[in-house]
Length: 566
Image 1 (spheres, one colour):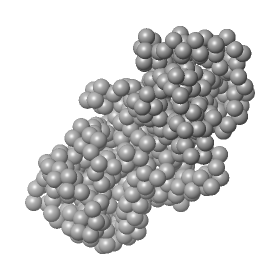
Image 2 (cartoon, helix red, strand yellow):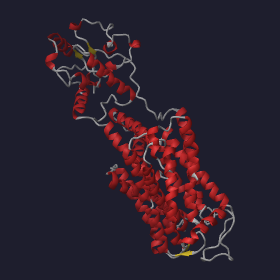
Image 3 (tube, one colour):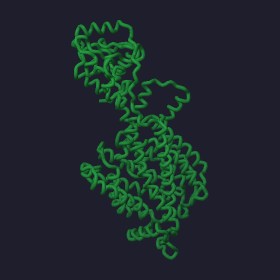
Image 4 (cartoon, one colour):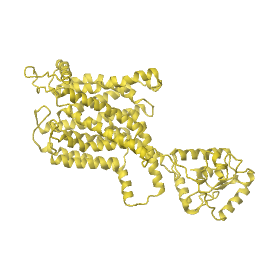
């Protein structure tokens, strides 16, 4: 990049003395390169730093505990609340409204964290997001309530990745890497394996103990897969409506939760038909759900006009309340980790809880536990393989290179480091648009943003590629440039021509020449990257080169020649 800046001056503007001096430099043997420290490109991950790895391990374990608890108790709560999915859906949304606004109101009154620009966002945007989330929520609630196998619920929920990839490709023209396409295909293949017993099986029993045939199970599994569509559309709309606007995550989710709750109320009318309830029975059913949450049975042998399964609400207070606790902490933990940690922690925890959840649901002391069948085990292995390929193919490739002693080119190492920096920054910015219980569907959208940002940042123009290649060969990329240092790839020193009558120490740019007072300059290492050119350095060029070094030292550019795509 610096070579391009310094060679931008026309050749005919050089003095005869500078050309003669440049010819002398090319004829002289290479000068020994000063042994000065290289600029450090900041790597926010610091993978080898024990001080940094300890908190990351703590975050991972914390995320693993709450993600597993959220998954387990989200299933267990439907057993005592089987007759009240309408109330469960309203409750899981309503709990976030006071939690969010207990932060929003004092933040607006006493701080400037929620700006006027954020408060002036049209509320219909939040209403559209809430509508998508409300539809997805009620579909998932009913599907989890009526799918008989807990293992099937866990495995089918992994369809969120390929479904959201499809939706985002259609709506946002998103592109993914080859390994991500392969991983998503493997995941869908594993789900098909899981569904084989339902395709050719017999009737089973649901959470209430009622007999359910295989065709009904397939219907509810389809509803579970379908629920990923509105959830992904909600994330897509957030990207399009809010774009790069800075918005407080809690403020966003608080208002979305308000509209999600309001829209969920009229959705109770068509949902009640699934239970065989009439419109006048909806409010009594919701009230019965509140009583069941308190551990009180409403549907008994003496009071069962709709022939529903009898209530068994003794464990309702524990299962429902524990799930709400795990769910709230889990969702806020996602935002905190994305903002201050790493998205890889979330992906690793989300991957690990899939087999752990299946193991827990097969334990005999878990209510309604069932041992995993052969096809469940095969499907689990296939789905896990797909998740690993989708999420960790790059890390596995680097691990393989390390174990086999593969020598990686420095340019490739710089590229990988820059890619990790980009992924970290995108993950931090993604936290502001992360909706509650949407990590699986928002993951693919975040992957697209990371891929696009990495492509732009790591773009190298043909000119940069050509000049870097020539420098590595020890060949000057321009008649006005002189390469010192042979095939090491290091460019020579920038020195002023004799006609300027300016000493190196007196120049504000003297540190570039390598002879000035390095301690008084912000750019003591520029000579390691700058081209050797015997000429007068203008103030405009000096400013341009200093800006390039700022980019280099801040991580926006690397010594390998990577630059932002303009």
